[in-house]
Amino acid sequence: MMSRIIIAIITTIILMSCQTTKKNFDLVAIQKYQTELATFYTDPKTTPLVDEENTNFKGITFFPISEKYIVKAKFTSIKDGKVIPFPTSAKKIKNYKEYGTVTFILDDIEQTLTIYQSYPIMEKYEDSLFLPFMDETNGVTSYGGGRYLDLSTRDLGRKVNEIILDFNQVYNPYCAYSKHYNCPIPPANNVLDVEINAGVSYHK
Image 1 (cartoon, rainbow, N blue to C red):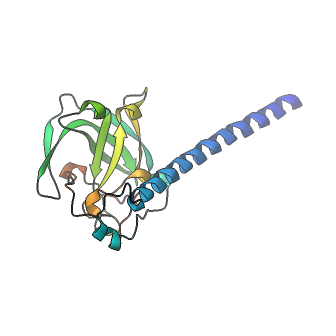
Image 2 (tube, rainbow, N blue to C red):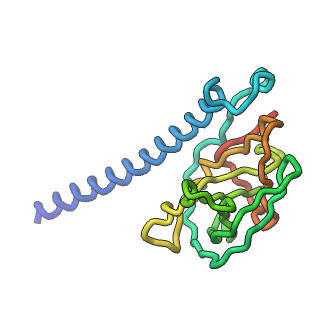
Image 3 (spheres, helix red, strand yellow):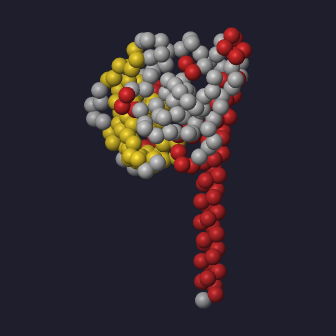
């Protein structure tokens, strides 16, 4: 009897240890992503900013990392998705094709966003998915022109009707820091009525 209790206790400790390790690994992965993004902008070899913009650049800032903004979403594929012309910051047009929708609960409110693929689809980017969106933080604590989240068809995994959205990894378009780019503006159907206090923040 005593041996069974000991085995049960050890099993519980192991399971808790695995869960803690997984959580810490996720945290480390997010921190790594954010560090690399910040370095990308400050490294002279990779920065998208020109010299005059670098002079006034204050660096990339982030909201505190929060598990709240890692959400499990229901994915629904859009068969024969329409090609949508996105207006851009440079008053031009970029085309994106509807790929699917993601539905999730945040702050007890059901939210739905549409995922897109750049069109025409280039072979080397055929797995790349694009989630542009706006939320209640835009123009206040995040960039007024919306933010982006990069996804992949591989993120769907075996459960093709389910996907994890990690808003801790959302980022600003280059246009938040430079006037030399042509950035798509998130469509009206991808405007959330909640605050996404995660990922890249923005303060002029």
